[in-house]
Amino acid sequence: MLKKFFMNMLSSFVGAWIALVLFGVVAVMVCIGIAAKFGASSGETVNVSKGSVLTIELSGVIEERETPLDIDYISLMRRDVSRPQTLENLVMAIREAKENKNISAIYLKCGGVSARLATLNALRDELSDFRKGGKKIIAYADSYGSGDYFVASCADKVFLNPGGQVMLQGIGGTSLYLKGLFDKLGVEFQVVKVGTYKSAVEPYILSEMSQPARAQLDTLYGNMWSYVREQIASSRKKVTAAAIDSLVSRDFIFLQPASAAVKAGLIDKLYYERKVDDVIADMIGRDKDKVNFVNPSALVKPSEAAVSAFGGKKRIAVVYASGEIVDGGGSGTINFEKYVPLITKLANDDDVKGLVLRVNSPGGAVFGSEQIGEALDYFQSRGKPLAVSMGDYAASGGYWISCCADRIYADPLTITGSIGIFGLIPNAAGLAEKIGVSPQLVATNPEAEFPNGFLPMDSRQLAAMQKYVERGYDKFVKRVAKGRKMKEDYVRQIGEGRVWDAESALRIGLIDEMGGLQNAVDWIADKAKLGENYSLSSYPEIETSFWNMIPEMAQMTAETQMAKAADGNYELLLVKFARRILERKPVQALMPEIDVRFQESTPL
Image 1 (cartoon, helix red, strand yellow):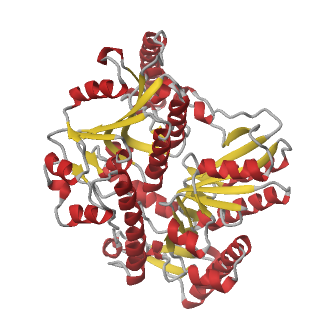
Image 2: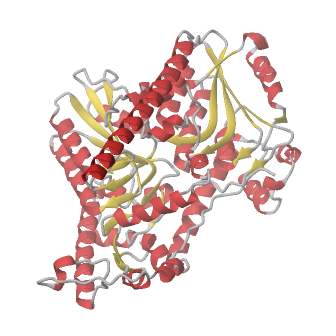
Image 3: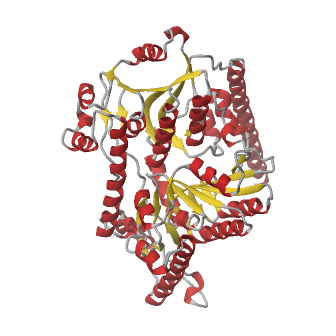
């Protein structure tokens, strides 16, 4: 017996050492490969010479701002360490290109962008401003997706491959209602909520969409599509907004040959990609061989947009609040435990004269929203102005943290509002029975483990939970009424969990003005009487790490998150989806799952 014990122990040690050695060998090989790649490219200097053209690859995911890179060793070995483009970096590159005398034009190379509408509109606005300086924009695609085309339509010339299509289809989304699945699994969701339109809970308790939920989405999508059509029509002089609807619904333009898009006025000319370089050279008056194509990193180095001017006596802080609001969480979320100390520190810093909160959040945990809101109140109590710039979403908890700002700006395609709260408590008693598990509760009081995931709530418990949620809603309503200087009855009227497009939000008083991040910064500078002599500091600070350096060192091409998700990992996505539901706090200020993107089809 003792001999067997020592043999097992020895084999464990040997196995551990072998694994350690193998890992070391792999790590060294990876590092050598990266170093070799870096060494080969480090000597290359990107020269922005006269007659240069900024090339923007309008493809893949566009995120709000650069975030720390989450990576594991398997991803590293697969070279899957890409970093998506960011709106922040692209905007900075376009602005630099506008002022740089050596940049003659921008070339939009469209290849399937994956971004929400407000992000695309912000990029489009920046490109339109670039054109005002007298420089040209040329767009090309093998086939245009709706998102690609929306951005590209502002270009001076829009070209298409003769074998391609314009996949313009409108705005829509499919919501998965899961009650039938949960019934089969034996899982019941008990719901307490405030708000007729607070439909975030519906997929778990209904088999089909309710009429209020459908009505608000019809209005939301309709208003946003109306704006998109008008913007395209204003840039493409040969087509009207009404004609765009006809092209989509009557003519099925996304199924028509490229020549139909030219005839309709959506496309200027048909070219194969190899010909586009010649056309660009002619447009800027240079020989083809002397046109220097540069990418955004030649104008804005990786991570440069996130490098802040933390010195100086007159600073405006820009705090990015992107993702779901959580009570503790990692990158990609708004963790109040990190944001509250940060905002407090900025409030107490005499060199910080004002703050712009850039909100891109569908909401989340009520407690976390309340804590961040209180910290922002403290910032204002120090006599410093606070402005909010809304991105794709600033709804529910995202609106909670926004509503008391001195000035609120939103993109015309922002989704906001959703003033409401719900509680979603799973009961897996049926599932436990199906798999032969019999939970046994022993407690001094029935509420000792309330809520219990294996016991349904009784009427008394449900009533207590409903009152708890209603108190949270009352607090939400009072905060909005105070921040927006409204009567509480009016807030309840426009609340009820309803989501609003920005145009409607402006009309009912939930926001102050249409505009982007720069508008909010300018307003703070004016309010704080800073003139033009001030610096910007971006937060949270991005921590530099070895992992974050890898994509830059290897100069790897960014892949889309969508492509990764579609790489046969649907089971993993379902597991992550279920885990996200179960890890949420029972009570949430969260908008419905509305991932508003253009409806896309695969080119035929």
